Amino acid sequence: MGFGRYLIRRLLLVVPTLVGVTLITFALTYLLPGNPALVKAGPLATPEYVADMERRMGLDRPVYVQYWRYVRGLARGDLGQSASTGRPVLDDFRQRIPATLELTLASLLVATAAGIPLGVLSALHRDGPLDHLARVLGVVGVAMPTFWTGLLALYVFFYVLGVAPAPLGRLSPGVSAPPHLTGLYVVDAALTGRWPALASALHHLMLPALTLGLAVMAPLARMVRATMLEILASDFIKAAWAAGLPPARVIYHDALRNALIPVITLLGVIFGFLMAGNVVVERVFAWPGIGNYAVTSLMTKDPAPIQGFVLFVAVVSVLVNLAVDVLYGLADPRIRLR
Amino acid sequence: MAAPGAFVDESPAAPPARRGRRPANRLSGAALGTIVLLALLGALAPWVAPYDPDATDPSAPLVSVSWAHPLGTDIYGRDQLSRLLHAARVDLLVALAATVMALTAGTGLGAVAGFRGGAVDQVVMRAVDAVMAFPAFVLAMGITAALGNSPAHVVLAIAVTHVPVYTRLVRGEMLRIREMEYAEAARTVGNRAHRIVFYHLLPNCVPPLVVQATLAMGFAILTVAALSFIGLGIQPPQAEWGAMTAEGAEYIVSGEWWLFLFPGLAIMVTVLSFNLLGDALRDLLDPRLRGVR
Image 1 (cartoon, each protein chain N blue to C red):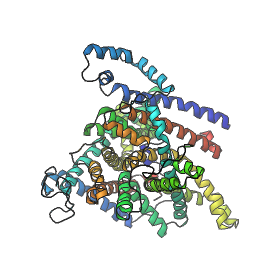
Image 2: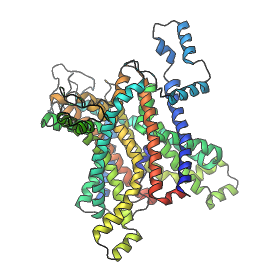
Image 3: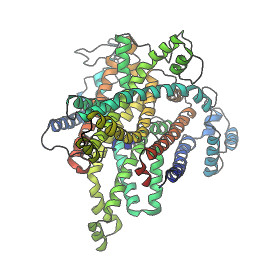
Image 4: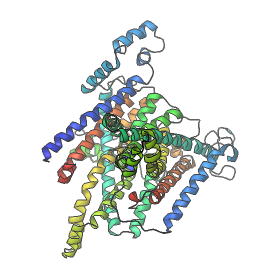
């Protein structure tokens, strides 16, 4: 099958998944939490006012009509209105997504920079000391609650050693944010030469990124190790050894390149880990991202942001998995036949 | 897919593990021992805990680790060891209930989908795909947020996110074995469908399901704790490890380390034990998955 047909088939598969996803979030938003009209009308509303509100919100219509309206709203970017900020949830998201993105990318960087070499080295020196250390790290790392890792890091580096800043956002008080280009403070500050802002942004990013990065590193290293071992045992590598190719070429050119392809598929899983971790890590470090926003809104009985967050993350997740499959189809033509 | 399926994606083709008594066996024994001990301590918490978990003591606020209070006290003078033990009961029960619920529902759906095939299979699998499209923790957040805080809702939320793993597992097994000769034989002699499924096919799924459920317990505990940590799960003053960690987090800036350290440690040890036990069970029960460690 050509890549074009593979791409089209994969794109079509997104449709039922997105329908399923929106059905679930619709159910969570409209069907479960009591009567939304009652919530909106407030506790002092008369029954007539509530009935009027129901009519205006379309709650007296059949469920499928309501669902259709919900989906049409989503297509226009309508994620509902936040009661606590009084603004559309999407606007609040736009303002906070750069913070979440910066943390996510930094953690991904930490995880890959540490996880891939660790996985490769422990596969090369199987059952050696490093492999054992990596295994222990992996097993323990997966079992550590991410919020607790963050608190431990905070206690050691902020309270005891005093080398980390107080967990209060992205910049120290008194440091002004760099001009908005990408919204990622580190990138913006570096591009515009705002060195104090760059230093402060990196300083504040350090602990949250390490915390989240470590959580993702363990499964990544494990996966890289497994695929690397599999490839090292395969015939073409044996042939390469037999042909007398230099070890560095066999390991890094032939084996590693092939071992990294299946790792692409792990990106979808990693994204899930990152999003789950983001919520708690943002909470621990008061990081002003969308996860923290969603959870904080809920404390004030404001459900729209969290429902918007769940939907947003699910849609991005579907797109990430789509991108993963497309990349995988490009990298490994065999996959297109499945 | 980002979902609880993350923990079944072991590498399929792997060199055979070496057999025999190795340190790994002792490790899994220790893991099983820890789980039994924790379950006992949790079940007997009202009798083994030195204090009432909710009893305040204005004369002993924020006492550090000491003989009278081995794990210290919080701002209200509540004994942290007693709270930790009572929390064990909550965390383990919620995780167990969620796991049993997901196991039952997931197995049922998977069996129907795999055995019936056709439209039923399509509907079930599309629903499973939709659930798996959500990162598990994020969906659990959404469900608890919509239903409201309560242990029952946390159980339900975690169960929903875990169902797909079992459904896919059982469906796959069903598709594989329903065409086998012994299943054919069972049909030929006139057994009813449900009898074939329950007596002849499902028993084959038990070993991988046990492995999966054990690993899922670890994930369930992490999820309960994380939900409670962000204020969506079990609510204070109820003692629960994640909620206790959240309460302790406020005292990091003033150096009361025992408040956040011990509940987190309890979570880690428990999850670690379930994961180690699950890995050991996989090696023992499911030779096909035996592999890379």
